[in-house]
Image (cartoon, rainbow, N blue to C red; front, side, top):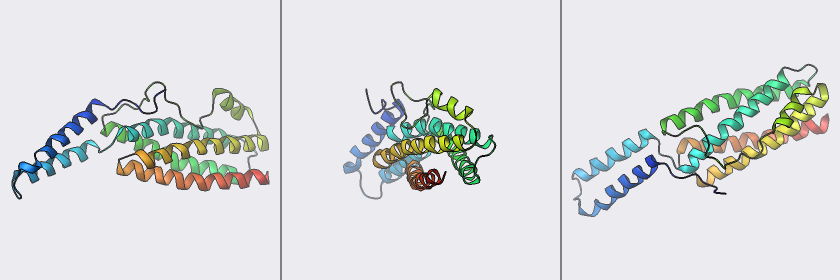
Length: 199
């Protein structure tokens, strides 16, 4: 099973364009038109979104991953008799991840990439249909414990994806988001472990 998707035609075209520009560097004299041509090429590339296949896969995978976290948070927020610390966490997760979904969706559009992942790729930490059904049915303290247990596993999956992006990604904005996800979700995992210990 391939780990990385096939590089898009746009990425190949961009790479070839840059290679062609670099090849002419030795024949250009300082101060001549090559500098402005190179600057123009960089500008066009930046406008199109300077990204690689890892950036694309990060966004494609993190969007549905975040969407499920928002769905899980909505489930717990619609229940009664949930500890206030748990509902506060669910509110925080929803408030952080919903805007990030919009941000990553916009990136993919700017990069001319589909929002759908290539076949064969999986997202770590995702809950299955049975897990979601159990969370939906649970009530009170049982629901709070199940939510925290599931969300810890969910966050751990996000950490894996974020750390992969931090190592292999290229887009500045995507790298910054991956770093932010890693930092915030590591802290939330610790917070949820502490909550579980108190329930």
